[in-house]
Length: 100
Image (cartoon, rainbow, N blue to C red; front, side):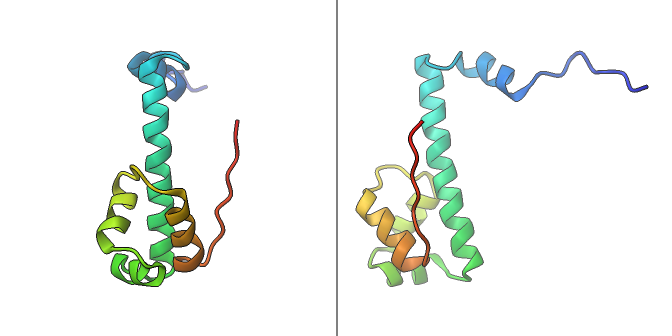
């Protein structure tokens, strides 16, 4: 029988200790930053799957390579209309949103 390592903590417990419980200001900031990170990573992954460079994607949807890079690296201050155009025209995908 395997012994459990009592020094292990769950990821949720780790987040609680690093950023505070859900709803606290530091945790809210962390969660928002994580969502923008995920968005940038999804765009980059889909771009790579399509075999596009940042410049090629920018050309397809009428923006700049620098803007695509900013989205993929920190996704800050993105206009929803531009994001939708990048996803629809540049990547041939659909954006699906949900509220929780």
